[in-house]
Image 1: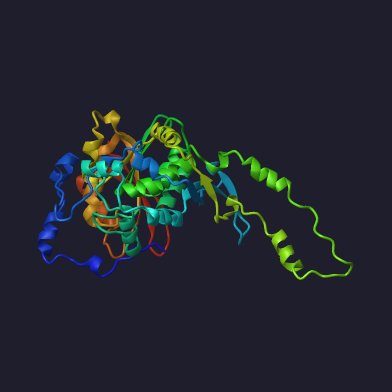
Image 2 (image 1 turned 45 degrees about the vertical axis):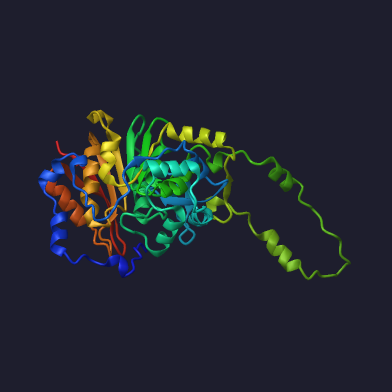
Length: 416
């Protein structure tokens, strides 16, 4: 079940309620302004929008030598569409279903790497810090925050975990079977970036840009996930010759025993022999790993391949449109994706303004969310009210899932 683990301290409310309500009030004039003109509260410092330099040593060195991964296996909404990458059989019912398989880095692997991070910045990272490229918490500090809460306003905005609505969005995109050739796609608040990565795997000519608040999320989660599904896919790696030789050289016989003699370990040996080899396609995720190149030169070559189709942006939404620097409508995105990003009502205006000012005429935005987020106050109704008040977009519910808290996907398209 999805939840935000807030402590009482995280939910403290300002005494000056009336002033806060006044600051949060949205009007048509504000929404019609470019994003750079929208006011941003200075009460809570935010990480400024910036493009992540994936060529930097700090970014290259953030890649672990070995990636531990698992599979996200997502059922396609409608069977028989041919959108799935595999067929899975339900263990309980025996029914077959099409699934989309996406590789994702194991969360425990991410945490382990963050724990290993040294508190002292290397020279490259010190320079980035001085230039303001990275202004968020250090890796260990972020892990401590993530352990206490899934959200710390202005410091850690989630991203390490993968939530249900991201899977809904992948399932919906797979069902649509859209042609993404030559298109530009942006995922806001991407985290593990499964929707954006799905699109990236559907075309060699699509550009998929990914944005998240924390640069550590991009380095430890987003970029490794992109690599796992593109340029270092586990299912496309040549099998190690030594492993093949080990399999061929398995002993075929054991030491003979006297007739009628029973070995004490017979049962254990039979159980070991009967144990099937772990297979990721069957959902066995333990100890599935992939080695990455060790040299900076080889890692840089990987990053350049990633850069050919993707850019990575960090920081607050309030400065993203200005950073993107659109010169015309044609420079904007054909598709904008976002999931689980409307949990705080106070951020709705910035998210909506970013979508509005980044989407191409004739394009569409897909917003996947729960109808209500307990403890933080965000809900689909408030977000819809904001959009309807502006009168720029048509809104359509294109997906709905019944659960303890209902989940929906909203499609936004410019009115004619």
